[in-house]
Length: 432
Image 1 (cartoon, rainbow, N blue to C red):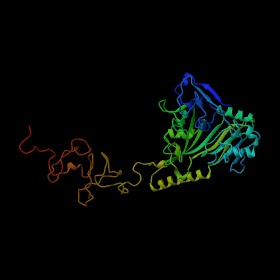
Image 2: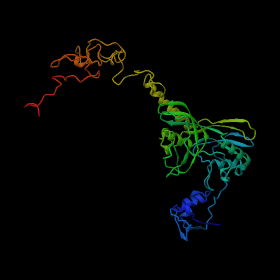
Image 3: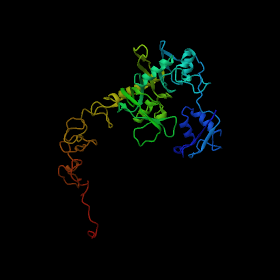
Image 4: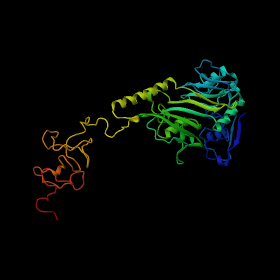
């Protein structure tokens, strides 16, 4: 029992925990850290902490074995798991949100693997490890949807190889935040977060910081519907990784609704990401028949989607002329900030440069303005009918200007009301 090794030259300067994790990749992280906190790991005979920097030639010893200790899940037959498909070779089950895929300790219940060993005891020997109970795929605790389960070691190997070759296609339904502008195909590799072990990062640039090695990942998105500030989409995984859909959409600037871990907001009180594994397509590894399985949206996601649609519809009902996504179909449609249009006319000077009135109607010649006086309507910019440019109309103390000098038609600013625009020199003559 235990282990002993000599620190290599290339390991010099590394932390003790990092070296142990590299030399014992199968060791569980939590037991390793607990072991380092007890002082049973020694460097040249001295108890060492996890952050101890090692030097080449030092001897590291420990009396405890770091090999991963596996276990069989405890049976838990009363969990709410729905069977979508069952044959003698494999299962397809629908996992609800809030349920782990497999337990993390031998005394834990409530995981999907606990339910599997209760109803299908043969799955204990079918997977990569007994605690996974034949699971070919895994879903996050907060993600609902379909999972493949092998009932024998042989079928598990066939499904595993089929998945690595891209023969198992999994489709998710997501509700993202914002307007989706693409890309519809995301191939950013995924790596461990440099400081937060609960997250991963999508590496879009080689200058981004990450930990460990890069894992290839490919996500395809098809927009189904834009719902104002949200969008509904189908997401397919060609190569699947941990948190892939969540981190890819967050890196694209559109995190999932409810995904607070990746910059999303807890919309609609979901308390989890709007992410549902709704479709699995594959060729049966034994019968070679194409198979497609579907799962409807669970109740909480269905209500959130209905709320998003209702909010969008209410907004469009309040704003005439609004189309999908809140965009206006026609320029000028809908009420303006100053009030609704009045018959296509808005005062005698309300036209745009070189055209008619502001709303496309004819200009009125010299009609009463807002203060009720003749000729005091709003000035038109750019010439034409109506009252003309402000400086084209002589007034008390203001000579007539030349056409085209008004704003914004071009030329210098006209004289100010009540006097000349030329600055007078100070009394006593000009300054030298």
